Structures are given as structure tokens and as C-alpha cells.
Amino acid sequence: MKSKILKISLFLFLLGSFQNAMFAQEKEGIVEKVRAFVPSYVGENDKDAYQLQAINHHKLWFFILDDKKSLHVLTFENDSLQKTSEFFEMGLFKIVDKYGMSCENKIAPVNDLTLKPYYKFKKKASKDFERLLYLEYGYVKNSFFRKVGNVIIFPFTFFLSNESSYDKAIKKMQKVEKNIQKQQNAYQSIASPLL
Image (cartoon, rainbow, N blue to C red; front, top):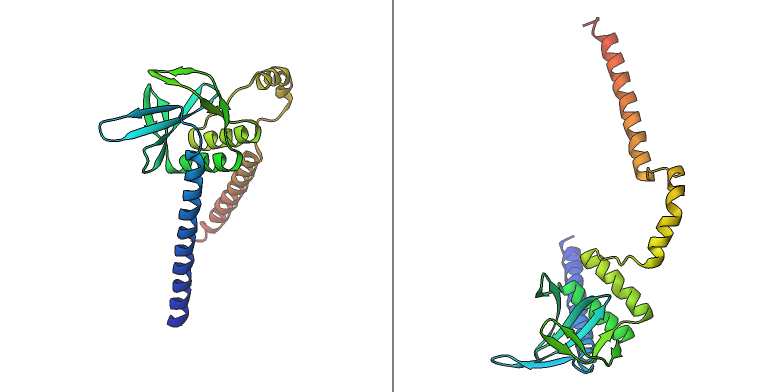
């Protein structure tokens, strides 16, 4: 029995290390593809040079910071740059790897930076990026057609039930629970005179 557990744990360890090696190779390939895009801004701090690739999505700005050692994704939150989560970084890099980015060869002033060129996602990449934004930040863009659709559908919502199937199932369970409680009380009232 112990030998089987040892074999299984050894197999899982080898499988995990193989997956980590594959993930590291995949990440290196993605990093090279992201670095191939022309930087929107090149600057220097006290120690090293860095470059930014700016991504615009419906008035939201995201920056891929390349400091020659690693890549990081930054965004503006409350008028300051904030580092995004590793999940968001990998999602963004995979979108760039799969679809690429569309270059907008225009000047865009963002706070104190002048960006040229900046990038946008088109078609399927934009939809995937919106899904990633929804997972990370809960961001949903309210489009004109969604607003018009809500206005057109609103009068008919009075005829629809507001309860979901989950709410209906909970109400059924509560009714069953009340019936059980009534039956238990009835049995107790019958049995109590005998005691």
C-alpha cells in the first residue's frame, strides 16, 4: 500500500515539475512576442532604462512595463500607477500572443506622458480583453445598444417573474422544512400526554 502511495506521489511530483517547465518556456515565448512591439514611451530612472507599451481600451489605460529583466502590467487607479495581478498579466500576455495588438500611430497625452504609438485590441481580442477586465475588476461597458435595449424591454419586465430558479428552489425547501416541523410538533403533541 505504501509503495502505491509513493509511486503516485512521485508521479504527481514529476507531472507538476514538467508542467512548471512547460509554463516557464511558454512564458518566455510570450515575453519575446510582447517585447517585439514598438514601445510607446522610453525613459530612464536612476539605475536602468525602461520602456512602456500603452494599451487603450474605452478610456482605460494599461501599460506593459519592460525593464529588460521582466515585464509588468500597470494601470491607472486613483491617479497613480498600480501593478495588476499576475492573473491579469498572464491573461493580457496570452491575448497579445494569440491575437496581437493594433497599432494606433497617434499621439496620446496621458497625465504627464506623451505616448506614440499606442495600441488597441480589435474584434475577438477586444472581447477577450473585456472578459478579462470583467474577471479582474468587474468592469462592464454599457454600450448605447444595451441602454436602448433596456429602455425597450423595461415595460415588459413587469410581466416577468423576479425570482430565479435558485430562489424558487429555496422556497420549496423552506415549505418542506415547515411541513416537517408541523408533523414533528403534531407527533410530540400526541406522544406528550402519554409521558
